[in-house]
Image 1 (cartoon, rainbow, N blue to C red):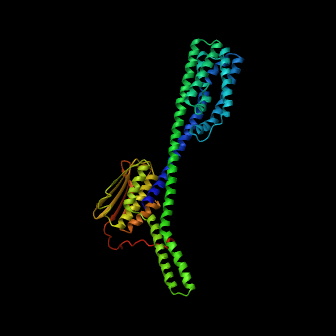
Image 2 (image 1 turned 60 degrees about the horizontal axis):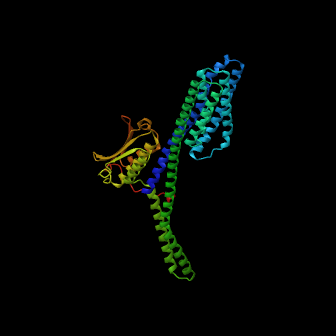
Image 3 (image 1 turned 45 degrees about the horizontal axis):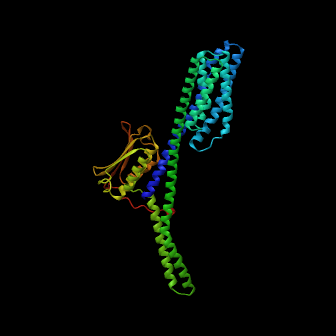
Length: 434
């Protein structure tokens, strides 16, 4: 039963993990969209505004400015196409085909040539040169920084900066503007490095944690299947072997006309019935709720989901001192309440409290996630089923907000069944379970 509770906990944690995975997917999408939008933001701001000066600098400057903007737009498109693949390469899930960098690298060289030509013909103002230098490498470096080590990225950026400054110096750009261009390159390279790689690293760590949680849940389910198989083998293996031997013996005795064959078949019948009962006991053990086990399981599951859980009164008269029927009913309440804590809202703390008051056992499950908790008296089948279970014992169930952002489920069961209510009978086994 304890092992099953652990598996149920893993499954419930998986349900909560499904919500967490959805949130993670949204964060991942937001990160990718941001990185895809960044080159376009640079394009329409620092890459476009300085080109307005070319309208007054003659047809050559206008042609160079228009070509620069068009090539830069194509570079942004290619950057967007490579962002997802570069993310996958950084996570190690899929290698990036380096041939996809050939065209972006060629376009970067073309953009560099156009920028140098604009500077040579005086097509841009002095302050506009620094802005165009800022925009020049952004679209190329965003995916590129995820494909190579940081050391390689910095070396290549330094080589590009030296080459660009040398070309600008060769066409007669003054020393002050050269220093501004070098500073702009340093800023943009550092900006891309500090914004892209940490984002990719954070997403990679979160996805690894999510994959590990999914794997843990699958392994727990597989382990429970193996354990259940071993239990069934232990229950049925020996008895089936005895049945086979005794039935063979009965056949031989019957062929010889020996009356002892009847005794052997009676023994086979007895063993078969005993095996049937043992199987029922195994299956019933997986279905019944046990209060101490459910308390331990709920605490473990909630803490594994990042919710601190405190159990009070489990060792007192309201816990292990309660009659078995009350413990079983309260065990179901603990199980359903813990499930609802995982499903609804995002609580940080949960308290499970067992007390006795006015000749009744009172179970309270309280958490600080009232904002998204189900409404009191809602039509959820879980709460309705619990009310029916407790009503059979003369008990009641209340669920609702308790103030200060708390949500509380309170189950009350009298220690003595009230008049007019029969004592709870043992659970019968349906024909389908036989």
